[in-house]
Image 1 (cartoon, one colour):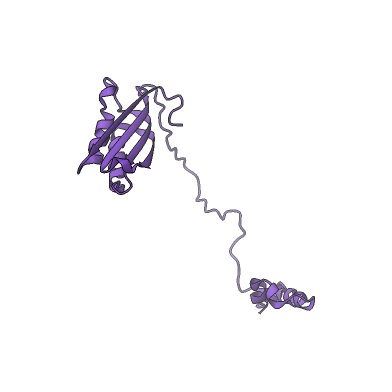
Image 2 (cartoon, rainbow, N blue to C red):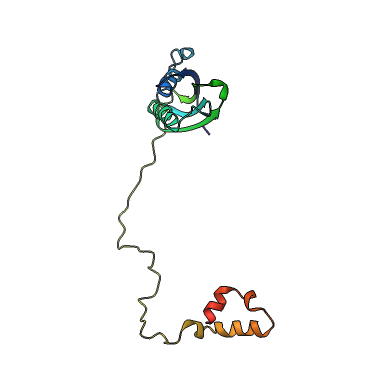
Length: 175
């Protein structure tokens, strides 16, 4: 999870209004004065809460906040965000950031690498199937007749089953 066993954590919050409120709130939340000496760069887990009134919050603003947060977090960080509507905020936007895994750059695990191996021959998924089918050797008799689907439908009708109680796919196969 984002919070468990991630090491040092920090929390920042900012509230702004105006034209560029999303960018300003995100940057202020990251550089919160309560966080003197704490660097968000390289955070391994980040929780972001964006709060605004329902009538004023735009998807563009949410995207802008998250792009700014991503630039500060580690490349492979787990980032989760949520939005809250609070109509009492009017035209203000609040961004709250909780970052974990700070100062763990040295203990960071390397990313798994994709290893390609040379395989002789090309595998197509049809390797175990028999060779090509010779369609000339197949019976000229339709499959419905070969499988006696018509007799199944006739037997059902003779036993008193209504025509429409027989599934449509069986009736169509019998035709």
